[in-house]
Amino acid sequence: MRIGSIIVLVWLLVGVVAAAQRDYFDSGPVNCAGFGTIAVTVVAGPLNYMGVNPKVDDCNVPQPSP
Image 1 (cartoon, one colour):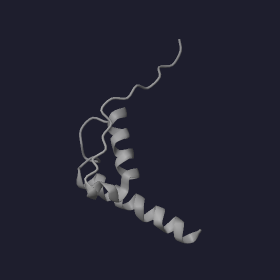
Image 2 (cartoon, one colour; image 1 turned 90 degrees about the vertical axis):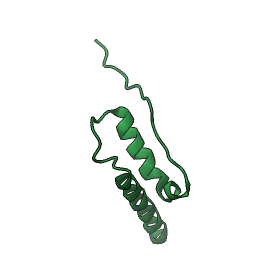
Image 3 (tube, one colour; image 1 turned 90 degrees about the horizontal axis):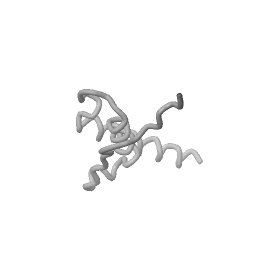
Image 4 (cartoon, one colour; image 1 turned 45 degrees about the vertical axis):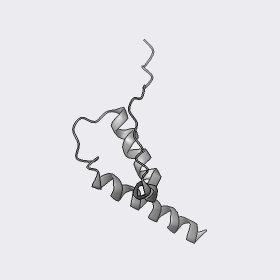
């Protein structure tokens, strides 16, 4: 169990580094698509360095009912 936790932690840290290298944390306006792109980049982890470039172009957030 401990080895699995370490592997997951390292995987996510590599994803955070990839997102930082792509300047996702420094970019302009923050919206749903921006958060989604950061999230999928972090989850993709080391796959970012193998050519995967996940992006969320559009997302629809449900509006509150009146």
